[in-house]
Amino acid sequence: MSDDLLDPAAELAWIAAQARGQLELDRLLGVPAALVPTLPALAPAPRPVAAPLATATPTAPTAPAPPGDEDPAALAARRRDAEARLDALARRMAGCTKCRLSEGRNQLVFGQGDAAAEVAFVGEGPGYHEDQEGLAFVGKAGELLTKMIKAMGLERDEVFIANVVKCRPPGNRTPAPDEMGTCLPFLQEQLEIVRPKVICALGKTAAVGLGLIAPDEALGRSRGRFRDWRGTPVMITYHPAYLLRTPADKRKAWEDLQQLFPLIARRRAT
Image 1 (cartoon, rainbow, N blue to C red):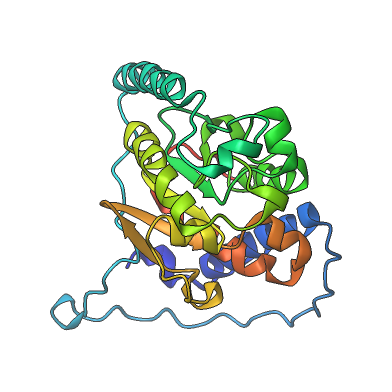
Image 2 (cartoon, one colour):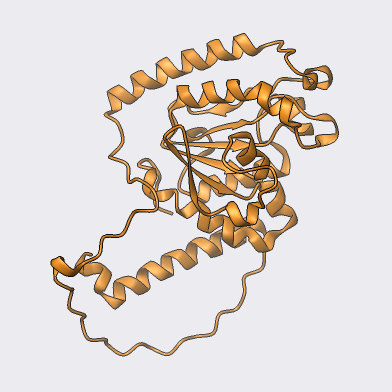
């Protein structure tokens, strides 16, 4: 542990940074801030003495810490290759009729974003607005996702966004298992092309579709912990549409998103 982490002033600064982040998410979600009582000033604390290295107990990291971002030239070359491969996949998927969801769609919603993104967000499926515009996560839930991405220190066009199914289920119902199974190879190919450092599964259907949790597993007991998808860490959290209905859970979602920070080299401080 570094000396900075043993400094009470540094610890208070870290706590203040977390509080600012939570208050910013409160503002983005339109939830009134709760009043916090003023605390008395802290008396100077004696500087603790670090334990000898021989007695320290190693702690397993929550998720693997990534190296620095790629060399700019190598990243640009990978992005060009990934863009071409995604474009070829989109052309191959055009007019898909592999499952019954194609019968009622207006537009197939492929997904969009940076072809070499560090973070990929995976949702459930297109809704009304997505079906009309052909883009993933538009409408109120999409607006909230955009604000959450900005709160993370990123722009929407710096991440990749897709859904488990590419066509809108009738009445916005949950996609059936066979529908998800039919569409899953397309999502898998997208993620293999983009090669994100971390994936964020938005909601239970996304987590089930990626094979991370069982259909009868409660999301509240599954979120907040990293799972593995083909060697890539995945954080399961709440869907933005759920947060619009249940703003009290926004703090939990923000805590989940903060766990992604150490894996994102390109994010800006907020």
